[in-house]
Image 1 (tube, rainbow, N blue to C red):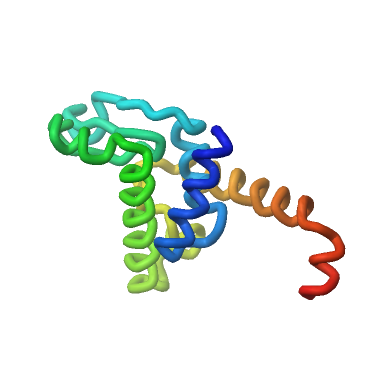
Image 2 (tube, rainbow, N blue to C red):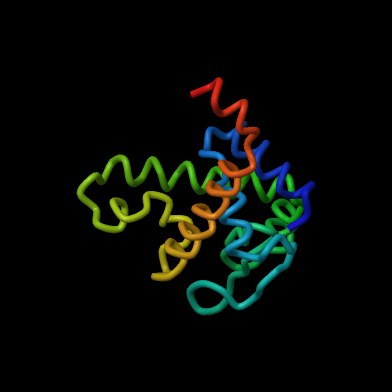
Length: 141
């Protein structure tokens, strides 16, 4: 992942009301920051997953693919899916999968996706805390 993409992930997360590092973690888990179109996804293998965040497009319609392929649009679309997942889970507090990871609806068909994103997110948070200016941390806490 390039520094520019990481910065755009952080900016988009902030603008879309997501926790810092979540969108970056999704992109790293999905494509490691490469913008790709993966065909043959979803029911019947007729859809495709598009861009750095692998936004699912049923039927893989060219105009829909073109709409979310640009990185900035792809990240906003991903953020919307994540916000929807959070909202979906907030209405189902007793759901086991929601209590495990309320962002799981981003990729509900995968049993390993949530743990992969959670693991990457943990590393990002640790790095963010370890690289803070110690003096700044002392004064702010």
